[in-house]
Amino acid sequence: MGMKTSRLITLVKESLADDPIEFVDASTDWQSPFRLARRCKGVALQHSVALDALDPMLFEGLVMELAEDYVPGPEVALEAFFEAWHICTPEGSDPLAEAASISRITMLPGRWPTPEYHKDASRIYTIGARLYEQLQGDFFLPCHKVAKLLGMSPKRVSRLLTVLTAKGYFAKSGKYTTTLAQRYVLGDVQVSQRLEGDS
Image 1 (cartoon, helix red, strand yellow):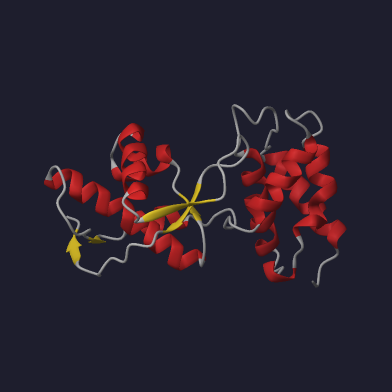
Image 2 (cartoon, helix red, strand yellow):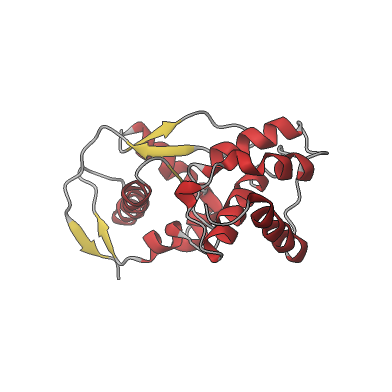
């Protein structure tokens, strides 16, 4: 790996001293393990440590220490951290924002209630398709973040995700839990790349 594990963990702790990540209650904040995984990856990359050489279980002691008072328990936090490690990107990288910023969208086929509804559904599908391609696997579409990026309400994003899943454009990956948001993959319905400028 090039750098001793103890040194890397010290660097992560220094980062946490400047910008803490608190583990309190998974029912109100499931993102803490996810944020910690991103932070550890980000610190590693800042110091030229290759991520493919890192085993997330090297951080077991750090996670257990930070999550000592975590509800429902530090072991649950460790499981969530382990899962997050394999799907999250390093801190400082935001593929969701990058996917949402691209101006051309893939228009979904078929009839939709209104042109605006059709375009909103197509924008969310396009983001998911780009994330799936970029991450080579499942991806998150957090409603509040997608809503902010696209100028929609979180409720509209949630309903569109439900519709896109029901129509087979997305499929749920794994089960939603209090410690980890719902993940998605592309569904069985194939979409031709008919593009439209999103002006």
